[in-house]
Length: 136
Image 1 (cartoon, one colour):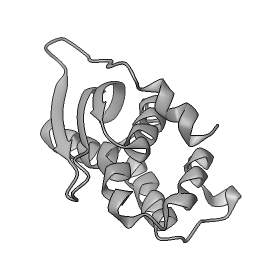
Image 2 (cartoon, one colour; image 1 turned 120 degrees about the vertical axis):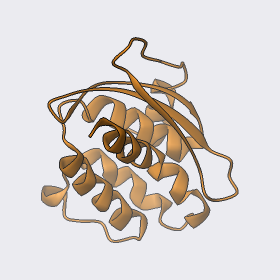
Image 3 (cartoon, one colour; image 1 turned 30 degrees about the vertical axis):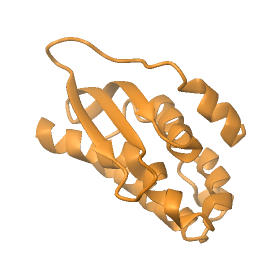
Image 4 (cartoon, helix red, strand yellow; image 1 turned 120 degrees about the horizontal axis):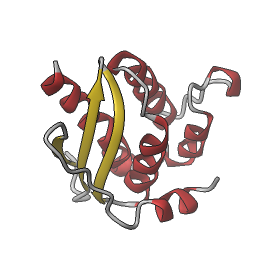
């Protein structure tokens, strides 16, 4: 799937409600102004469900769409491994196709030369890290 298709998947906000929902808002540390509010429900140290409100460039929107579909069922350590791979891809160091935990992250290899947008692409992982800390 293309970057454009992933961005289309998160055009409408999908927020979670309820007493068990944890929420955080993260902002890009760079000047692009990207922002993500991420809602999560956890059970036994694993993501059960996610919700979001994303106001970010196409990279931030695409990673949010991918994380939204792939993170449920995963632990903090498993997500950190995916996060590390995305960082490597953004540094123009694409792992082999077989080594990619989430093969769809390969679309971000074209963003290696847009460093001002990298922080936006990493927003969903930063938000999940914060939420896992509050869950512990």
